Image (tube, rainbow, N blue to C red; front, top):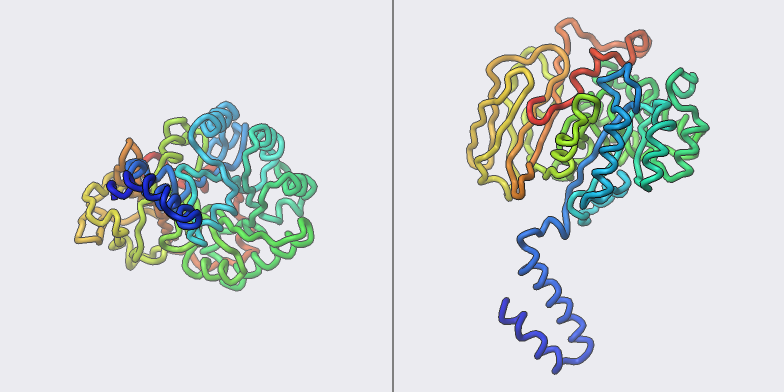
Length: 391
């Protein structure tokens, strides 16, 4: 190939223009392969990092809030580094169509449509011309609930190019309600979106980052293109588009170091995940947890997995298969298993997955019962936020 590269200029002089045109393309491709191989990810990538925020400058809610100075530091890093801030919908389109993106492509997402999105985040994002997506639960907006945006404000965002996504009607714990109620949550909210902003959202965020296999199927049947959790990791299409991860940012886990770890991250591609469902019952807690590594990383033995309760976990590599064993059961509530693998240039491959452990007495609740539960308490949200490697 090197000989062809050297001889190509002489050959081009003797060829017809049309053939020269194609050979020039071949030369360019060879140059990219030969000289760009060491940093090939800079040319094209099939992954992206998705950041998630909730509140801005609302110090009363530290588990879901990012301080203004933190948020501005985040935006400065994104603006001044070699990052590409894309609309979330564009990223999903590229992933689904198998189209390349630049390395270090980033999406900014915001959950719950709090008023501080409009008053604090909007002007700062607008000043930098950064695209972003806001996921909205329609009921708090319909009720003019204090601390939330109005439909007029949401329409202003939409007119400015902000993508509006769905987060159901009443923001329930979806794995705790019946399939019928879950379907109603999406049907009713989609009708309200159509009435208020003229379209049904194509992207969905699971409330609290909670779901199960039945909920995933309901979301698919409702016509959404993709759905997002609140577990850390790099988004890619290797094992579907309805459990896409996001890095949650808040006061505690919104440091510049953690942001850089997230936005410089690489995907740890796995499939054949066991257990398939993220909701565990007593019979498989602790689970026999495992997955199959993608071919390009199947021979790497540097895989490490962590959990906030047990710390570093036992990992057994059997060919391309990784089996993770926990020393004991998960406690009731939300948990995470995060797995990482070092890559080049100080970057990390990252795969995170939520684990949901219902109380022993948990039954399927009706929406009427669930609406009496607290909407966003620090206790409910405390397990959502992920640290560097452990949760």
